[in-house]
Image (cartoon, rainbow, N blue to C red):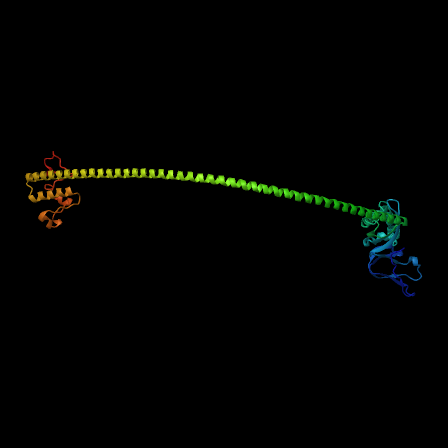
Length: 404
C-alpha cells in the first residue's frame, strides 16, 4: 500500500497547458523531470510548484513531483509466529517510522516512494519472527517491554543504510491459541486449588503450632512460677543468713572498735606524758642555755669593766707622767707658767679623747677662742709646743721632747 500522498495536479487551461503541484506541511518532495535528467537532488519544501507541460505532450514525458510524508507514520501489522516452545502466536504490532529527509534522493532512487512495503514491512516480519522464536510463551505476559526493545533493535540493524528511521515497535495485542488458553486456565485453577489447599494446610499447621505453643507457654509459666517461688525462698534464706552474719560482724566490729578506742586512749595518754616530760626537759635545757648566756654576758661585762678601768688608770698614769715631764722640760727651757698650763690642758684634753675640752677654775669663764688649738698656731711656736706622738706616750729616752 502506498503511504505517500500524491499531490493534486492542477491543470491550467487547455490553451496554456499550465499545471502545478502542492507540497503539504509535514511533507517533502523531489522533482522528476524526464526532459532534464530525471530525479533532481534538491528537496522541495512545503509550497506550490508550477509544472509546465503542453497538452499534446504524453503524460509520461511531463514533469512531476514525488511526495514523501516526513512525519512519524504508524503501521499496524498482524504477525503469525511460533514461541520458544513451538506454540502458535498471533500478534498485532505497531511500527512507527519515517524517512530520513537528508537522504530522500537516495531513498527515491534506490527504493521509491513505496518504501514501507518494499523494505520496512518484510524486514519487520523477519525480525519479529526471529525474536519470538527465542521467546518463551510465558514471557509474553511479563516481558513485553523487553521483547519490543529486542524487535526494535533487530529491525534497526536490518534497515541500516536503507534511508529510513525506526522510532519504536509496540505490541498492541496477543491472541493466544484456545487450547493454550484452556490449558493456562486449568493450570491457573490448579495453582489456585493448590494454593488454597496449601493455605488450609498451613492454617491447620499454624493452629496446631499455636496449640503446642500455648501448652508450652503454660508449662513454661508454671516452671517460671515454681522457679520464682524457689528463688524467693532462697532469697529469704539468704537474707536471713546475711542479717545474722551482719549482726555477728557488727558485734565483732563493736568489740574491736572498743578495744581500738581503749588502746588509742592509752597510747594518747602515754604520748601526752612523754610529750610533757620532753617539754619539761626542753624547758630546762633552754633555761640552762639562757642562764649560761647570762653568765657569759656578766663575765664579758666584768672583763670589759676591768679592761676599761685598767685602760683608764694606765692612761691617767701616762698623762701624769707626760705632765711631769713637760713641767720639767718647761723649767729647763725657761717656759712660762701659762705655757706649762696650756700643755697641761693639752694633756688633759688628750686624756679625755679627741675633740674634748676641759675648763678648770677661773679659766672656765674665758672663751675658747683665746686658746686656739689649731696646727698653724702651734707650729708658730715649735719651741713651746712639743710634738707629742699619737697615743700621748713619751719615750723615756727622749731627753728633750720640746726641742723637736
